[in-house]
Image (cartoon, rainbow, N blue to C red; front, side, top):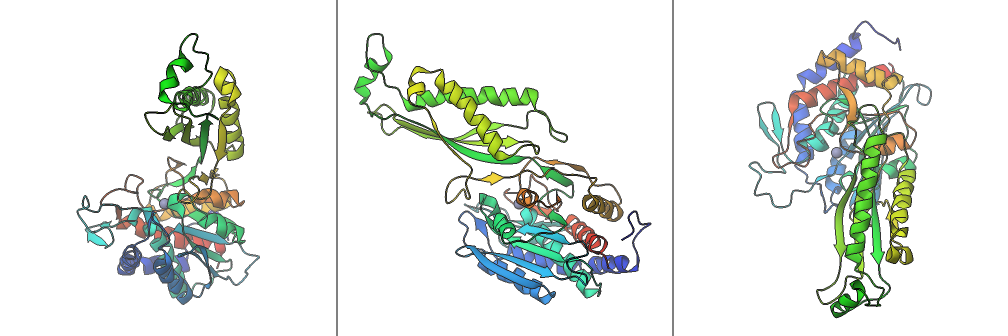
Length: 429
Ligand SMILES: [Zn+2]
């Protein structure tokens, strides 16, 4: 491949024209995906949608691997072997098939699981996050195939499960060995080329070995009461204050390009504690969400939070004797109430990311915005597996998980055209 090319060659132009001539196929592909509901929670419902993706990949000449990550939730990976498979550069296109839950559909003014097209907008659950991205990737692959372009490198197409609940769909595909020289997570980025920070959730538990009647509270808190007990909820409040101190300290001292200061938040998101008004609370559990910059690993971040909270606990006479317990991360918000999203340290100078930026600039007629997502995606697992990774997909973050979710079909089409051009350039022909 010649690096800074003058413009599209004949094959690139033909593929591009094919995609522009097949808007109806793009819309139908998106509609097919939206109309097989895959909300999570509850999850365990992606089989029929994954069967669609699988059939499509097989028709496009991919060798397809499918396995159950959870019962009823299979991952599907298609590999389209290049003429110089293993030598030429490979590309991994990644998407998740699960979508955010809908719950009560009555606030929706259009049916969530039917594609409603009004002008350039396509409405339906998952249009923005991220069946639009999957449709773009599938149509890009189809265009390359239909135009008879012979790629040198492999294309790996992953349709995974479990992203919405921090589950193991992508981690599993990585563990199964799928790698490429460049990975694109086609998730909601509004066609910006993005990295992301990381997220880890954790549980902090304060527990008293003894359970006291509410009537004993006076003896626990007043002069001369003589009973060294404590309410777990009140002690947790001390620890929440400590978390706030650490959050503010991080906001002051940490920074990373692309993030507004203070993006390293510690959110006390869920609290559970106490049993009944006739008891002193003997247990309190706090679920926190910790955001960190791409230059750190979740394990170190968790360790730092834990050390800080332990020090605060050591300064309290009761907590010093009954220190809090910690549990970090997890493999599913549904199964073990915990999750990790590793960061994506975007490198715009990486030749693959540069090729993506160039392809976008040529097709959109303006440079892509480059930056850090305010959210997290499974792109983190691709990066954690050692792949150069960029997040790039149609749809705006405000639309993800929203009532009346929509995507701009022009964005989906641009994504398909850019991904097709990237495929031709990066994998070579
Ligand atoms: Zn997503």
